[in-house]
Image 1 (cartoon, helix red, strand yellow):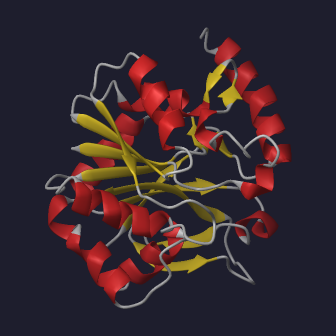
Image 2: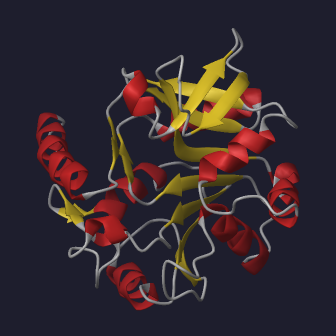
Length: 250
């Protein structure tokens, strides 16, 4: 199994902090945001390599970080060649770029570089092993909040029966987060999605398309999750995550 951290966005909503620094390298509770993610990934025996995909603007930032970061798994930083928000490949475009660039022939765990989470990735992997294509799902507790994300409806077997990206009138409070596990034999579906001219940016659009063609299952977790999309969310995550880390003895 390989892991991919998505870090090719330009985070314009977080200017000036991200004008000359990629969002995943901003400090949260005393260390770069991305290291909270790699801490979760590097303990999984299934993962043999971690990839970070970024853009030309921030490639050197990530490269320098990776060179100085000690990790029991090899980390490779990929440059998708884009320079600004207008030319970016988008999240799904960057998944395809990574698959093509490294000639991916393994199960692939995809995580957004601006999502911090407390749940066990090992539990997510076990769920994937039992079920197949898996998406992490969190109860945000508010239909209003779901409108910002992806509304998910599950059957009794946790199979996704409906998935709506940015729903106008959500009926549930279950939202998908950007954490996916795809088996190697299904990776070609990313190419099929892109080739059909679908939206290459919002990753939920791919799941919305995919679940109508393949069984996709939702792994529901209850532990704390932070989606760091703007300065207010970043400040809140910094405060709350520091408290969580202290409580955990980190």
